[in-house]
Amino acid sequence: MLFAIQGKAQNMADAANRFLNTLEADKKAKAVYPFDSDERYNFHFFPKDDRKGLSINELTQAQKQAAVALMQTCISTKGLEKAHAITQLETVLKAQENRKANDHFRDTGKYYFSIFGVPGANTVWGWRLEGHHLSFTFSAEKGGLVSGTPGFMGANPAIVQTGLQAGKQVLKEEADAGFALLHSLSKAARQKALIDTTAPNEIITFVSRKAALDQPSGISYAQLTPAQQQKFLQLVAVYVHRYTKLFADTMLKEIADAGLDNLYFGWAGATEPQIGKAHYYRIQGPTIIIEYDNSQNGANHVHSVLRDLKRDFGGDLLLEHYKAAH
Image (cartoon, rainbow, N blue to C red; front, side, top):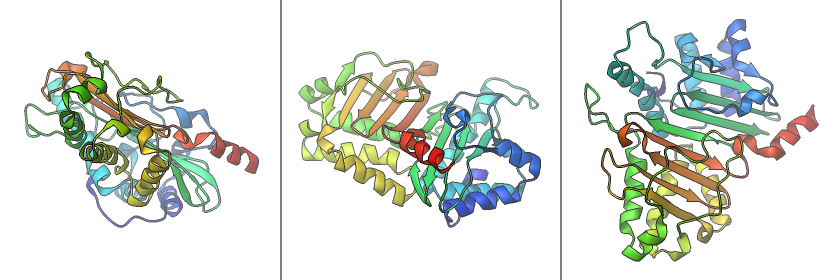
């Protein structure tokens, strides 16, 4: 129940150091990397047995509490609730796949914490939380959160069909807001938004170190009615508000400053929500890419991501600042 614990967020650097101070030397050695380590860019959301960092399974209760305090400095309450629900889907998959109790391929404790650099009020540093269907990379400088991306959340099953969690739809908000925007469009506007009749089998940016897509396609914010524009912004907010309010507000301001008219909404695949009908959407603008894909496992398996085109993994400028200080 790690992600279900609530409480008041602390300063991020203080929270990171309190977490580190709870760790024994061998655990700290597994958790800490230099900020300029290539491991910081090792972003992946598949189940893996060689993921780096310190897993939840290795933490004592006090260490888990300290890890939660760190998460609460960056991730909103709603984001934490979704993160916890994502980890619990591992139990659903374990049952569906008839795995034995001692088989840990599906494991709610295989989510890993890594600290990059030395947390401090005047240092360049960062941290990562990552496991199956959950990956957030945070970068900080001079006591402020610079970047929180890549920020990935997935859900398999997208809608649980059987068992104690039957009916559970962890990323329902992401699905509903996407369809709400699509269905608000006129026939002509929907044709502009439709970029393909077939959904891709995966988010297109995947795990690339540099998030990049072709020129924006679909329908632009400028081409929408005021009511449709409101739904567009509500969809963007679903992803941005996975983060704490201060950081989310800063990101939303940067999106607006870059020009809302420069945002595009594109849709591919089925246009009605139904298991078995693959669908995909994306939002693309000068500062962000948002992708949502539900196509795998009979179109009941969601991948969603937010990428910051200027400051993914902290951005090149932050790395230059770190190197200059060393």
